[in-house]
Length: 269
Ligand SMILES: Cc1cc2nc3c(=O)[nH]c(=O)nc-3n(C[C@H](O)[C@H](O)[C@H](O)COP(=O)(O)OP(=O)(O)OC[C@H]3O[C@@H](n4cnc5c(N)ncnc54)[C@H](O)[C@@H]3O)c2cc1C
Image (cartoon, rainbow, N blue to C red):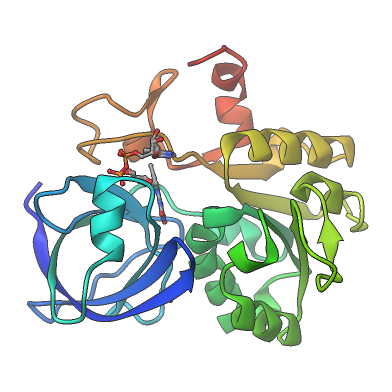
């Protein structure tokens, strides 16, 4: 429960409401983490919130978070300046199933701020590219300006990731896809028996992506999703993030879809 002090090394504005912060521990200790894990982080006095680690797992001496300013705590984090100290606990939670992804065709479905939690998995796969089959990234945002990591999407594409982007709406300068991420599923030819999918984004997006993947023949036991429910303690004590008989902070945020499907079928659970 005791937070550690981290210093902000740099900040980068990614979109109108999203910033990436690079931090280092004030005790010079690397924060080893697995792709998909999160920390509980606070700028002090504005509340502590769960934020996924968006950095490179092979560079644990840098803690990287990509934060969308939606309320008090996230606005304070996005306003943080180099040299400022933030309080960090973690890392917490169950990670993406990197061993299961090995030798599979990996389909990654991300919506909006759902891409940062997937970035460590992508970087990890690219660092060991031969271990994986196809890597397909389907990424959707509200507008072209809201898509994160634009330069990196190009670089991932050059490194053999099949990158498909789509936006909800765009002007005439946008030559890419328009529509929901779900539609991209129909554009890729999947081998369902070789495919393992990982997804993060708004819950409604993930539900539709899963339905499309299942229509394409991918079983629910081959699909993983990161559930970003409200949480407070981050370590399974307070019960705020309960999902069915599970706690998202302790048993998630990454779940096998077949594990949570029965609970998601219950309205407003
Ligand atoms: C495991 C996990 C990982 C996360 N990773 C990231 C990340 O990498 N980057 C990022 O920007 N955000 C992430 N979030 C969401 C982030 O924690 C919330 O945006 C934050 O708690 C909002 O706090 P606030 O005080 O700024 O806003 P509040 O004033 O608490 O809320 C502002 C608005 O955001 C909504 N909201 C609050 N919490 C959540 C939530 N957990 N999910 C969706 N909507 C919420 C509220 O309903 C309200 O409409 C993650 C959440 C979880 C559970």
